Length: 42
Image (cartoon, rainbow, N blue to C red; front, side, top):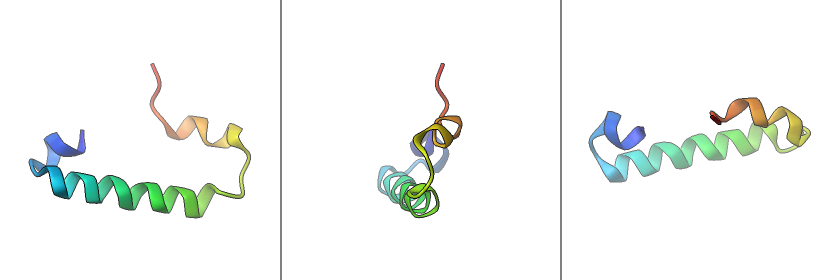
């Protein structure tokens, strides 16, 4: 999704990496059950 939105594979990877780092910083101490709603799963 990021690659399509940004039309730049390198920028998309940077964006996803930054988002994952923020996720880990904010949720690393929380139980795994609180992580599940953050991800789209069909």
